[in-house]
Image (cartoon, rainbow, N blue to C red; front, side, top):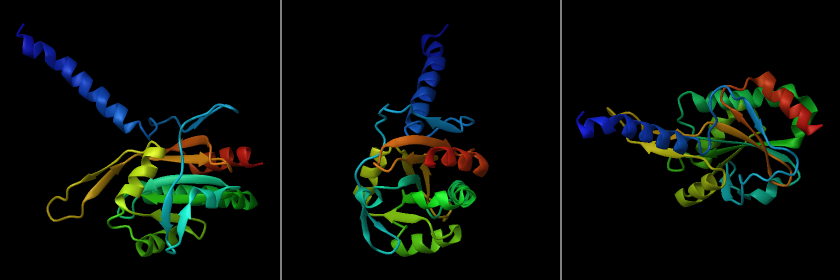
Length: 202
């Protein structure tokens, strides 16, 4: 057999593994739903940030101490995944009633060039009043994305359309001290998310 041809399957396998590893930096495989850690187990996800919210107020991670954070990275021009995920988060928080007061849901943009505070404020208004939307400079967003092991990459526009941004699709639950507790995949239904939050917040 021709040696270069024989190497093709291995090259394809390596490419697939590399692509899967990169995407898994912040994502979950479909169907896993909820991933958690045991009490006392440290997972290196999350960290300091300094970003601007939808009301143009500078916020850091310290502003949210004492509350759980439900963190999602996305962007306002996202065609489907982001609005669906935010709607699931909003629905789940509505379902848990007064317990929702213990949680701050955060939407952190991966598209700071377009996602101004004003744009984020208008966008989040469709999902209720609980969300805090955060944006900042490109370096600030890259830094917080690294802290949360989030992958994102801008795709050039095609045929005059707006550019899109590939990004991890995972929701993180952080405890009142800013430590990782659990993450939820995109296929987690509102009822399942609400049930898991209820168990953890009581």
